[in-house]
Length: 311
Image (cartoon, rainbow, N blue to C red; front, side, top):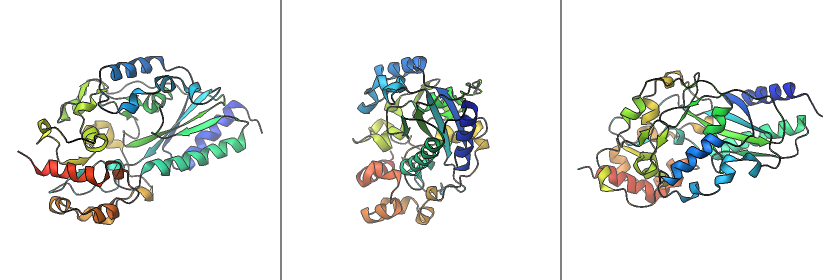
């Protein structure tokens, strides 16, 4: 049944919040010219390191109609992953907070599909798709365009109410909806994220050189970690939250309500000594269905050995 645009837009946002998303914004599915130019420049400069997949599908990244026929709207949604209790830091190696629990891809994708189903039941959409970090979509650009925050100096999307410890999902649809407007960048003169990065990976405002990024080296990289990084990884063995932890806007972060994101209980008992003797069986138990599986056991052990071999 066709509804008017205003009612449909309100319905989508209300359903999103009811399903546990912390924010929902909608942008017109136009060509992302400015973001596309910046992204292409980033690739040209080799800042994507050896993540070759990021250099592919340039047209799809900037033009949503290449992903969804006759696309009219991009619905962006934020899903909180800030933990109620962080894992012990003293005498311990660190895991990025987004990877504490189960892999977010399946959890959020399921919610996006459920939301899309509700939208399809309510409207006459004929062409829509959901996306969560596994397709050529510039998530932060669309979320910024939809008024959900601004892209900070650490390249993260920052929301005035929620900080930046959230994941971004999209629904691209042929529905014509009411569109939100971008908000002002409120980073001001703050450079805390730039100053805190131990590898100087934030080379200029909003630009990360993956060749220097701890997250790249401990997750995406399959080679040995270069010796030049010894002593400066700050005990991070899977991902890195340093630039987010120091961001003043994250004082507004509040704990998530997602049971699947809660860490395995045994992770609270781990320390450097235990990580140093981690068996593959223990790894499988600790990180069952976890995003840490992306690095595989071999990668996790490589990272731990690298941290153990400080100068």
